[in-house]
Image (cartoon, rainbow, N blue to C red; front, side):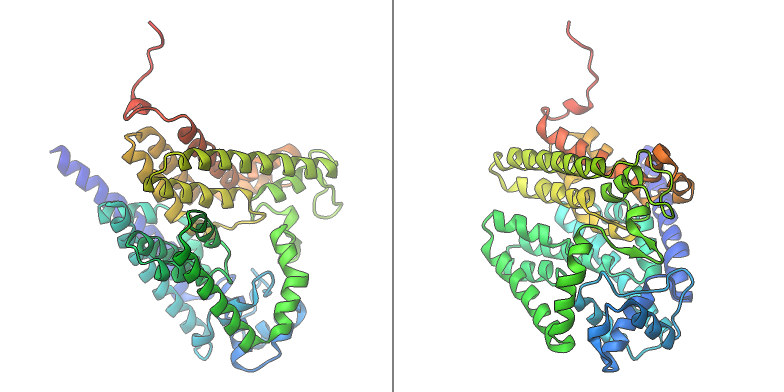
Length: 429
């Protein structure tokens, strides 16, 4: 009887999550164009139509092209920056389609990637496919946002999982190619390549380098060198430091891209128009605080990685990749809801690692935070933005990810024998 109720509850959760993703993500993406997709599609049309690709980072000109192709959106006027130049090639195969048709194709590809990721994770971690499906669908808004906006993060996350799977299957060159293919477009997979290089997995690194070089050469050949020069001289540095722009509002003063960079700008940088109510107008505190917080996080990550490296076993690779994946989200100058699809592999590896150690409590803690990140009601948190110290309440995803990171580091630094995390403490006798 208990087994029946367990299966019924699991089925109910799976159906509920699938219905949520379908109704909030798949159906809207098949019905209309939203937010970020016009930028990706317009860039591809500019390439296919033979227009001047040197002007991709000319925001006014790029918006004119968006209007020209009938893709102007009140929600997002559109711009190409801060995307790296190879991003313009993403939708080139679909550029001759009608925009909505192209988005529908992207949506179908994304759904297929979700299904592939479910089965790949199940193979990697020896999970039941149903449990794997529950895990991935529990990322909630990450999938919904990725589908509605036509973002490539679901695809990239799938390639990260595939690359890790091929690495475990001892096909290092193919693993490196999968991990390196999207590095010139979205930088996240480079952290996995860097870690595997640290482990002296040279064939993986070679495959990654070949993929990165191949994409870069194709991009230069199609788009020309000038637009790449503009990117490195004028865009790349601002991207890494979070000096981006969102519509007509500067990112340093918005909680949409949740990070310590934007939070400390809100708290300590006065701007009469965009941030008239900081907690304290003291830019020096912004700089010092950012260095102190990110420095402490990096030191904690290094300590955890050293602790894992001393285990000198192949099992150390999984939690190390997990720690590094979460680390990037915590120290990144800007993240978005849909980028959290990239958490699939690192979080799953950490959960599996702790379960294998018999530490259910750490595993369930990480899973619980992951689910909360997937279903944050931002409509209730964003109103606190720009209200002095209350701005802290506008950054739930940032603090949840910090809690996940701290929890992982703590549980790794202070391990207990199998099962003791779950045993009640009665104190000394």
